[in-house]
Length: 222
Image (cartoon, rainbow, N blue to C red; front, side, top):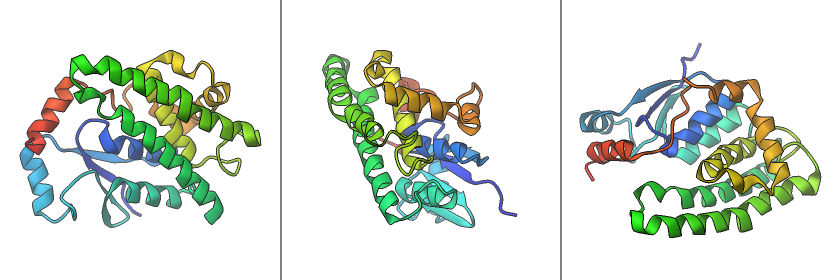
């Protein structure tokens, strides 16, 4: 019997958080080995575990996988969260790329200079409410089904709901005009596997703060 997947990353959200979400939603228990020092990171690079000299890295099914998209694709396909055919997969991929585009706008916020942060947040809110959330709301409205693709749970739903939590952390009012997205968030959050992941003490990580950023800088030496 294969052991639990082992996740190698910092004790922070970053690129590993979507992997944590997907594994948790699939009901897969996993272990984490945190990179706490520059020496931890160097050891992974020197022992050949990181083909491209970067993390996240996940040990799973006898492989050491890097590149977050490759890891997510494998987990989704293994646990039937990647559509029934190539057309469904194409739609799932399209929605995931939209999620990734909006997520990328949030990522620089923790390192944005204080005098630029308000303007950056304003732009993010505008993109969120005028461009991205309406697109996903319209997808759900167009077919009247509970999930984005094929009327069953897929990785697209999980990644979108992860993003919706991020949106609400920025401003709880941003979802007010999107009832179908709010319903999707509630529906996914109430799935037993996801509900467990959302409880205190789970592997879900808190928002990035200056302390986490400073530690990452020291480990990566930048």
